[in-house]
Image: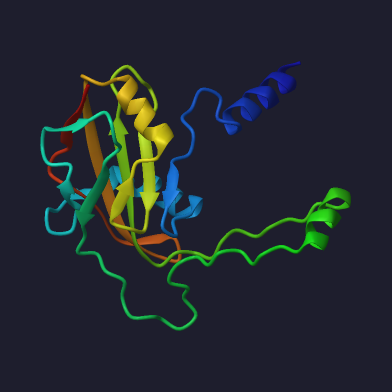
Length: 193
């Protein structure tokens, strides 16, 4: 009986019982890159020169609820010259034929994870008052066009102050080799009616 209880607890923990979902991925970001950033986040250092520098939002900016904004930032973490044998960013999987789709009905195929990422990766979080899980993005780009479902979470809480935090690092084959870095402070913004 005790073994069944332990196994059940492990399964619930592994399935994310009560935890937040994975973030949205932008650019060429992958779940492995996200995990590397999350694992290294506690040791992030404050470095204004290497942390994301936001142009949108500005501190205490108010966005009209009618249209979702695009957050933009600059990063001094740049892609370095190509190292032989190192994939810069993950490639898209090859297109699947109709035959492959049909054969998966009989014998499902397993897909390998995407190639490891080498380059700058950014983790952004918007803390939403009254909500346990933040709205998150992991990306290799320097823009975040909020999706309709993300914007709905924010507009449903309009009139409240949201907090945007960011962490950036340089990864080589999904391992943090520079950083992570964070700004000295978070950015606050609001959504107006």
